[in-house]
Amino acid sequence: MADSKAVDAQMDMEKAISSLATGLAGGNMIYESSGMMASLLGASFEAFVVDDEMHSHVYRVLRGVEVNEATLGFDAIREAITGDGHFLASAQAIRDAHKIAFD
Image (cartoon, rainbow, N blue to C red; front, side):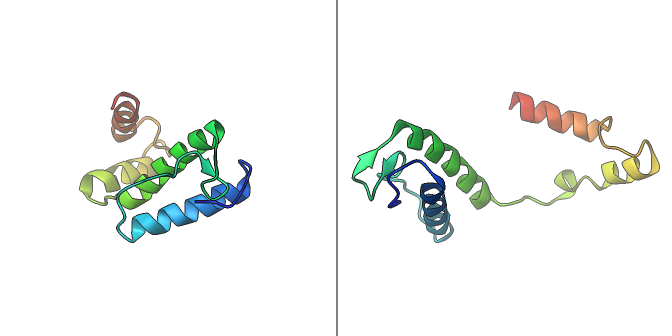
């Protein structure tokens, strides 16, 4: 919830901090959040779009960062250092870009 009566930085900051804190505390249900403004006294389509994006970022933070052999990419780092000096042509970069584009 936010006290702001406009889609502005105050609304974004208040909602983002409270949503992230709720998620980190284990809350898993969103109710009367997206698009709501002025302490739930009003609603805004613009705020709904901003809140949807904010929730996707909160979910991404809650998912965490997976670190393993596949995601670390040590071989790609070594090849970039000893090879062309960049990752753009590496097999892992091409595979990851394809995965992001088509998953």
